Structure formats: structure tokens, C-alpha cells
Length: 88
Image 1 (cartoon, helix red, strand yellow):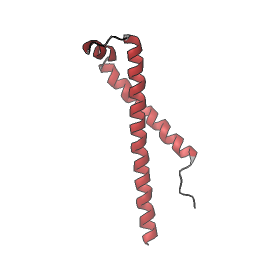
Image 2 (cartoon, helix red, strand yellow):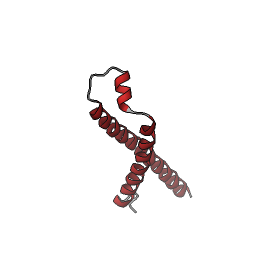
Image 3 (cartoon, helix red, strand yellow):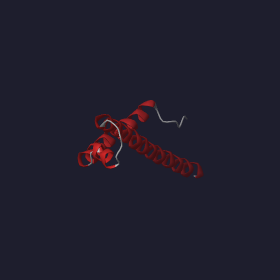
């Protein structure tokens, strides 16, 4: 029996993680304006472009972190289930 997750399963993990991360990024940046951070750090950049870059980087970073967490959780759960069933 093949224990690898199906493509449908992987896509569902990534999709649900993207939804959660999208809401999280929206909530964070509703309070924090990346352009204010750029001004406070005295960065000589376009504030509009910096906002978009901050939104994109934050979304991708958090999405990868949440996806890694989900996949590790599934991996260890599957490993635990496999070792418990082979021991019987």
C-alpha cells in the first residue's frame, strides 16, 4: 500500500494554509503599516512598492511556515500510526 499523500490532499493543505495566512496577514497589516516602518528606519525607498513587497514576503514566509508545520504534523502522525500498527 502506498502511504504517500495524494495530490488532492496536498493541495487541500496548501489551500487551507493560504486562507489562514491570508487572514493573518490582513489582521497584522490592518494594525501595522509597512510604509511607517520604512519611514521610521529612514529607508530611501518607494513606500508603495515597499508595502507590496512587505505584504508578499510576509504572506509567502508565513505560508511556508504554516505549510511546514502542517506537513510535519501529518508526517509524525502518520509515523506514529504506522509504528503502532506494525507493533501489533
